[in-house]
Length: 318
Image (spheres, rainbow, N blue to C red):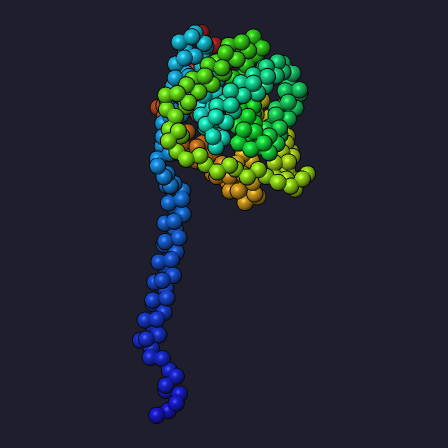
């Protein structure tokens, strides 16, 4: 027998082995895609903690909005109270219930001065812009104090943000302050009284505070980064819109929230960009038909110039 014949692999065996290798490769890729889709559309929720937290937040926000409305607050103040309740229920993440109560009580202590600052600078755009960027940087820097610093920083930034959204003026300050207090009280009543499911849970481990010094410390570096990014975003936003420029600052700021590495920041920025694009598309699909723009016959310029009977008549014509 020729020795070389023993080294030859039958052609049918070769094709079978190659086919099995391809099948395994395709199966691995399919499982990888399924894992990615599961991470996008599903998340583990042991003990239904996320579901219970979300349901409690809906209840707390509803109580806050109803309380502000029943006490005669205008719509802008009702919105502010609802936002305060939302922040109190979602951003306070101290490991112990007692610490959560203390952090929640400190929210108005931080938020009300920022609210007064933002409304007081309504007529001074330059000082207002500088204060907005400074609050954004300080809010990120406060994360070095752990969960309490994070919650207080988020509350301070969002308080300044909502005043720009509502275009609040100093005359509205009393009603806005009272709505913030009512919102926090409503959230506290729901979280620590009516539905405090954390009492039945073991206390989680205390978070590890970020270390390092100077720019090597994550919170310091990100505070500088968000200040620079917020400045550029503010300038770009005002070039695009004199009325809604604050959304650009808010988008730049939220990218740095709850991130500690460059990869996390890039992923969050990409997701925010993708969400914004998809949101614009979905908003156009929903808003344009509801507004009735698609139901009205457009008046094209060339029809008017060509003397067509479909050209709109002048409103000044007799």
